[in-house]
Image (cartoon, rainbow, N blue to C red):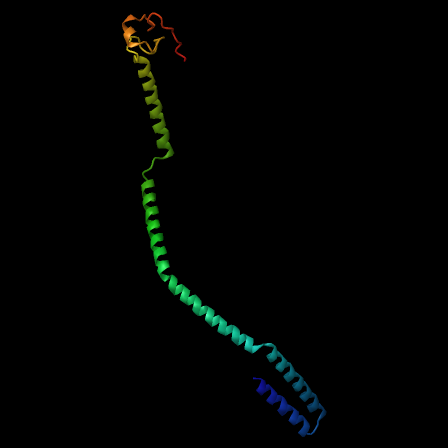
Amino acid sequence: MKKFILSILAVSITLLTTACMNPSMEDGLEKMDKALAELAAAIEALNIPQIQADLEQMNIDAAQMLETVNGLEGDWEVSMQAFDELHERLQSILAQSENWATSEDMAGLLEQVEKFGDGVDLLVLQADYDYDGVINAIDQCPNTPLSEINNVNAQGCAAGETPVSNGD
């Protein structure tokens, strides 16, 4: 490219020296000479060897990237398979969640448990844990020894036992 520009410059100079000099032609040739010099400087500034070196390095880098991607192809397949399995599991959980209890269901269940608890409390009060014949609700001595269960009063206490309050 430089040779071409230099050839054009040489032809221009030859024309200048051999042609008859016309002031407007001289002015035009000077402008053309100046434009050619600017063009040559612009081409020189492009640094074409560096551009070629950069392009070669880009080709090398692209080839390495392609090689890396091809090497990862198996890893991608494994990853995609794992992703598909995870997706299936999540879909299964979602399907199962449609059968899970709602907050309204849980509130109803809590109400039933509380009613059941009230029933259990009533049964505990009607029970006789120490087998002395006095139900727990009125037994003031709830831990009467077995040897004394036949010797208790109406409050469930045998001789020598200290009554406890029902609030303890």
